[in-house]
Amino acid sequence: MRALIHRASQDVRRGERGITGLETAIILIAFVVVATVFAFIVLTTGIFSAERGKETVFAGLQKARGTMEIRGGVIVTATPPDVDTIQFAVATAAGGDPIPLDPAAPALRTVIAYRDPITVDNDVPYTVTVIVGDADYLLEPGELFVVTVARADIDGGSGPPDITANLRWTLEIQTPVGATIDLTRSMPGEIGTVMQLH
Image 1 (cartoon, one colour):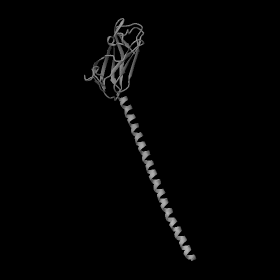
Image 2: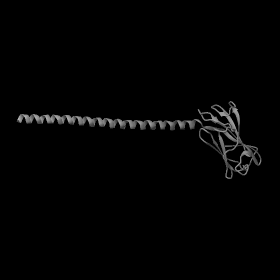
Image 3: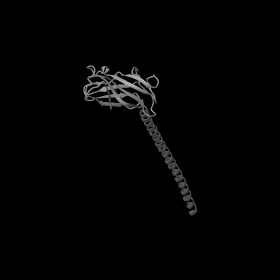
Image 4: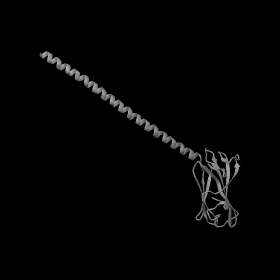
């Protein structure tokens, strides 16, 4: 009888070992599943963040590559004491993308705004003269265009401004791609027929 009880208790212990092994396997599988889900979430978040970072870098590059620069000084012609035109030469920045400079384009065009202490005009008509390059009004690398703004075309609501001696004014050149250029100059103490402003 004693042997029978001993054997029965050993059978019970063996059964418990089997259950303990099964429970351990279930817990191990649960850990693996949780770790897999966590790894998937971390990888997905990382890939999403990397894509957003890449988009930001490409947008910054496009903005930098779409930038034009002023070449030389700003030329002002006048019939003293009245200023007639403001002219400046533009080219693309080194390695830059083409910039549309067609003043008559209905969309995707460069806009020039004029500001001084009295007058604000957010869309000033201008003309473009091609110095170097083809005549397609698309400023491409290696080309040089001269932009001319006539004072008579500037209208802040009360007609053309009086661009007189010592007046500080700004032309803001807003391209559809690239950075905005602020061209701020001060008129000299005496108005001449042709003046170069630095």
